[in-house]
Length: 285
Image 1: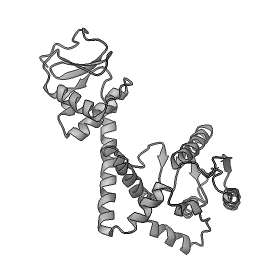
Image 2: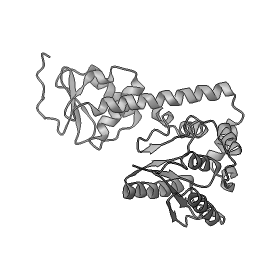
Image 3: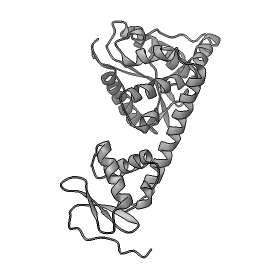
Image 4: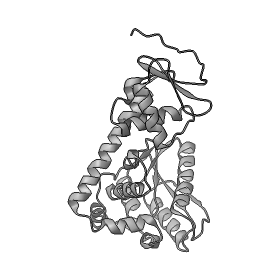
C-alpha cells in the first residue's frame, strides 16, 4: 500500500519525509492553499526534495485567498489527500506530533466539545508517525541530519486560533503538558474501545446495560447508535434518553422525534419507527 506523505515544506513534514526517504512505498503529496504569495515557492521546494529522494510527487493548487479560515483550508487539503489516497490505493501520513495533539485538544475544549474532543488525531484512515515526538525532538532531528525546510509566516499570525493556543501553551509547565498528553492518549484508547464495542452490536437491538456506565461515555455510545438512524440529539435530550433506558419498564417508549422512538424490552432496547410498534422481545433470558 502506498504511503501518501502530506508534505507542506515545514520542519515537521520535512522530518517525516526524511524518515521515509528510503521507503519504496512512500510518495509525496503537497497541497498549495494559495493563501500566501510565497506558497508557489513552497511547492517547488517540496517537489525538488522529493525528486532528490526519488519519490513520486503529487500536488494540487487552490486559490483560497488570505481571508481563508483554518477550517476551510483543512477541508480543502484533506479533500485532495483523500482523493489521492483513493486513486493510489494508499493511506495518508501526516506529520502531526504530540504538541499538535495538545493544541487540538485545547481548541476543542474551548469550542465546548464533549470528551471525544480530547481524543484528537484519532482517524484510522490517517497515520501519524510523529505522534509521540515532542517539537524539540523534531528540531533536534532536523539539525542532526541537515534537513532543509521552509518557514510558514502564517504560523505566527495571531488571527488564527491555533497560533494563539500554541503561544499560550508555551507558558504551561512540563508536568501539565504531560498530564494533558496522557489524558489525550487515554481518551483515544477509550474511543477505540467504544467504537469496537459498537461495531460488535447488532443494528436491531442494543443491551440496556450499555448505558449503565459513566453518563458521559453512555452519551457517546447512544450518540453513535442514533447516528446509524440519522438521528441527532442535544446533550440534554441525550441525557434524558439515557435515563429512560435505565429506568423505563418493558414496553415503554421514549420519543426521539416525531417519527422515531426508543422502545424498551427487559434487557434490550430498539429504535422503532412508531408509537404503536409491537415489542420485539418477550424475555426470560
